[in-house]
Amino acid sequence: MKHAHLTRRASVAAVTVSALLTLSACGGDEGGDDAAQKAPAKGAAAVEVAGVSIKKDQALHDALPAAVKDSGTVRVATDVPYAPFEMFVEEGKPELTGLDYDLGQAIGARLGVKFNFTPQKFDGIVPAIQAGKFDVAMSAMTDNKERQAVVDFVDYSVSGSGIMVAKGNPEKITTLDDLCGKKVAVQAATNQLDLLKGHQAACKKAGSGQIDIQTFPKDSDAQLALRAKKVVAQVLTKPAAGWTAKTADDGATFEVVDDPAATGGYNASPNGIAVSKKLPELTDAIQKALQSLIDDGSAAKIFDKYGVGSIAVKEATKNAAVD
Image 1 (cartoon, rainbow, N blue to C red):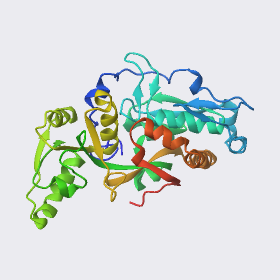
Image 2 (cartoon, one colour):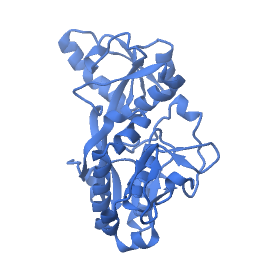
Image 3 (cartoon, helix red, strand yellow):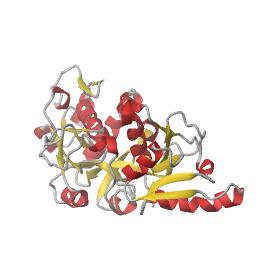
Image 4 (tube, rainbow, N blue to C red):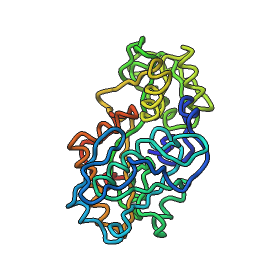
């Protein structure tokens, strides 16, 4: 989905006000070298990632390509920052954090290797994988048929647009239909604006009045409008909504509407770990490692850390996109 203004990625995504305080535009060769990032040695009991204890699976390690086993690392490209998927821990320093980063460390720990993340401009990630510079990309990348022609995907989330409201949901908004006749904030020139415009016909058919769409140049401006109660809701990507609701004022100001008919968000699409087609054994190993993390509950804890539990998948699929 990155950056899901136009699909991950046709334009640069806005970063929430809260996230901007901790993010940096600087680069770095890789993430930090704390204990949680180190690959478990053979026979090691477990590695802690995002507060979750991850044990190495020797059978999965043995199934890795020889080059990966020999180096002990998987070279991972990522485009930083894009909260909550990838962020800098501290401004001016290269250490990384975020959903993709933590999930990568967990998969690496299960496989018994290190996922070594390197910041890379998004548009150059797939060509760099094709050129052999990286083995994998973890960067909230939308799985689609066009990209499947040159890389394989292991899909770990499904996400689209979400609705964020004031804490307590005073207007009792549960679906898009509940936005009819109300003022709603959205960033201009985004998929989310198109979503609201496209729902006007349903509002008219229901006789509920049109959505009073308030557009803003930046996502953070739309967030301020919701904070000031000038609108009853803001529509943005569901991962960004979840992260903002979790982090703004320590979770005291906003909450995310979870429509049971669209748990991952509206117009949701699969996001995947992109793997070089030259490394099919690595794709298979990552898929099996991710599934094991889903099965034992570790993946859910990592997603919940970033307020995006609703976008997690229950099955680690391969190349799930069909269009």
